[in-house]
Length: 460
Image 1 (spheres, rainbow, N blue to C red):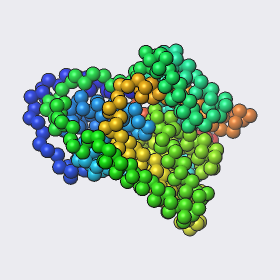
Image 2: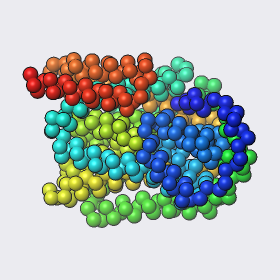
Image 3: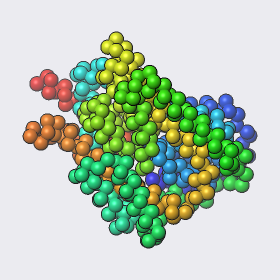
């Protein structure tokens, strides 16, 4: 993705600003909490908000250091905006700062999605809710098409990468090859390609030159790397051991208490794997989540998966938080705590999958930061990631076709085409791709249209 044009402006009036005073952990905590509630707009919007607040307004970090951190997060699996917040929090206030920043980026979204998921599953048959989702579903189809276009325009810079994208599409569409295997094959292709044709596999997703100055910053261009952010084998070992314990202890307790085949245990294991597959953002891992949660485990239906993505698009936080919806619906439907505790089952399952999905992101920042920074620009490291991103484009295109099929032909190809849904999807795609309208605005407009259409149908 490219950073917003505002980041390329010339803030000459700020260049003589006084360097900010030290920021206390409490001050930072309040900001990270605020960010968790206003982080709408997907990764691009979230990164733009952080840039405006941290670089332009508060001067907590310089433009160059901000971009350096962002480029680091872009080569990791996981939600890059959440990892960027974790990185900056860690740089400012050590481990507790990173944990606070990353957790507060996610927590508001988790609480909101638990509430919305409960309303959806408990009252989804109400005409009001059904009408709103009738319009939102086609909008989601258009949003996924936009995601494929956005990532593809950035990633597919030559015929080699176009070929990888096409191969990935055919692998998942025609051959039903699991997403993790597609990622592995793409990485292997990129590694070989990086050695044989390095010019074709150089990363093209850079974030511009960091030549803009917004005045002296607390963490400035020439500010030495703090001691806690320097590489050390002892520190790395401690973080890895702690991280493994934070994963193994709850996984072990679930296995002992419920057994390996229980819904909650399988959710913990499945979303651990999903967390390691999120190269290219949330849209890249959604096909994997669908393959497992819908086709494999039956935690929710294809229609519910589309509805969950719609809810994820309309709430703050990273889009990968749709896993909380998947967890809630799965725990609720499977009644993991019995028929009298359905809400509790859903809420616990949502919190559980959130824990196992985001734990690796924290570990990548706290343990891998110094290691990954030392390899930045190494073709042997970046070429596999370039190939994975190309493969992701093909996978997302398959996801768009999957959504379109279930929305426009709700009864299958043997049933009638829902031409109203098709028109809503087309209008949403034009609004997003041609007129660059805000995702939230498009979803809201489509929801109103859907409600109007279903109301007219009911009255007639």
